Image 1: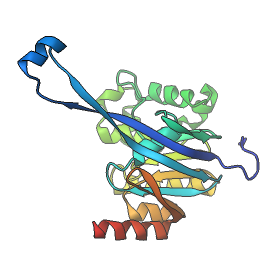
Image 2 (image 1 turned 180 degrees about the horizontal axis):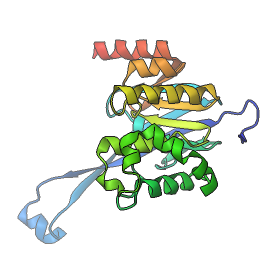
Image 3 (image 1 turned 180 degrees about the vertical axis):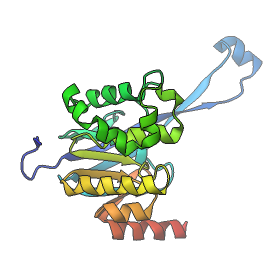
Image 4 (image 1 turned 30 degrees about the horizontal axis):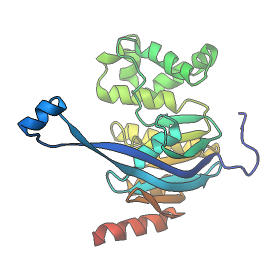
Length: 254
């Protein structure tokens, strides 16, 4: 595998990152205002979902991101993935990314499972020959139900089968950075353990992990470093155990 960063260079750099969202607020208009303003009007206001966010992630680090609901965790992950653009600062990623965010977001319902595997892996830079070599491994990981329906339209799969196939495809990629948003605990108990073992195997290969999760068990199992988002800003950066302790103290005091 070819690494693109120089020795000692961080693979993720987030510098003064901020994103501003528009929040619409409608008020009732008088008849006079409707006549002169053309019917409707909206007062517009904005708010900063995230601001002044700066940190670096080195190659091979396993970082967990914690914070309350609506605190900007998924928004930050999407900006690192490049699917959301910041209004301030930048998020620079120097190596390829395997995004375990919306596992089936890029799958097409009318295509078969087989066709979706080739499409998704191909969009991440794998050649048809490489996909041929890994196809059976992908389908075996997804499970016998997926194999039985591999040439049926993807939309006929249950939601569980769809997620299992998505996880199997994304984790077969050679991308050195793995971005995860609350998708490790998918499927039944047996499949969840397969997912955990796959993640541990990827980390043993030296992959970099950036994990968003509310599960303390997952965060402690996979991550050594933690980031804590609070009020749209980075409140703390330290060991995973220390960050979880601080987060839990804040929750109890609210």
